[in-house]
Picture 1 (tube, rainbow, N blue to C red):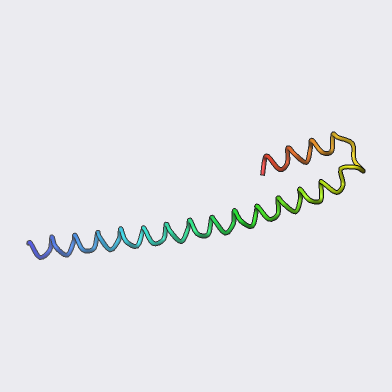
Picture 2: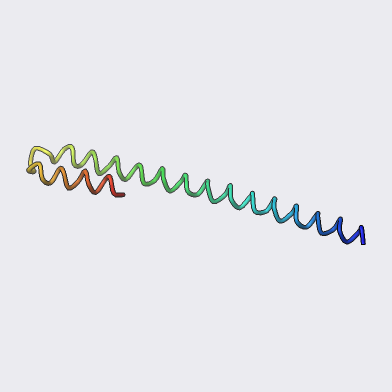
Length: 70
């Protein structure tokens, strides 16, 4: 009976370790995605900055709202 309990504990520990590992990989992937999104946002901001003189301010406000929402 004690052997069974010990095995059960080990299995639980393994399960927890695996869970932790998968969580860290997920968070890493999230970081990659957020960095990618940041790059896209910066690109949009640069384009918007250069197009500001050609547009009315309403367009600029719309761009700002889009950036805030994303």
